Image (cartoon, rainbow, N blue to C red; front, side):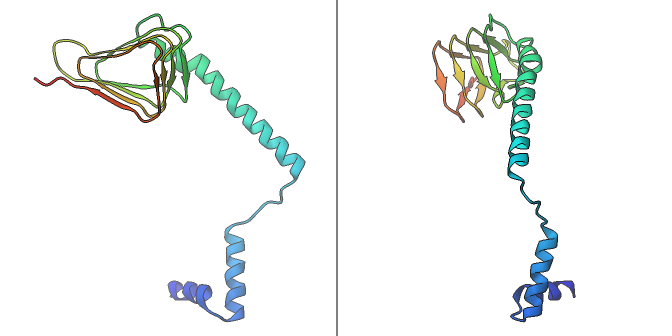
Length: 158
């Protein structure tokens, strides 16, 4: 019954049906009047608070947490967009001036006699959504820049 009424309201050429359909759409999606100065100021405050909270969490929370889980000098490590995910047993060695997206995944193989190692050199950029599957070792030399969505797999066959 309801499906038939909805179809009639939507498809009927009758003026009453069209008016009723427009009224239903208006009720379903109410709109607020935009007050230019007020809403522009509100948007500015929103952007400022969002950026402030993001930087605060990056400096106070994500970077120290990630640094506690990796080895190396790791000076001037700059994480953006959160903290990278480390899966499995993996040694991550990070040198200086590394910029890294928090939307990256570092994965060590399970099992084996040695722990896999990911070594990140000086002045390295790791873009977002990069994934490293380390069988034994992956080394990113100094001054490497990685675009987004790069997958590196260093698997061991044996």
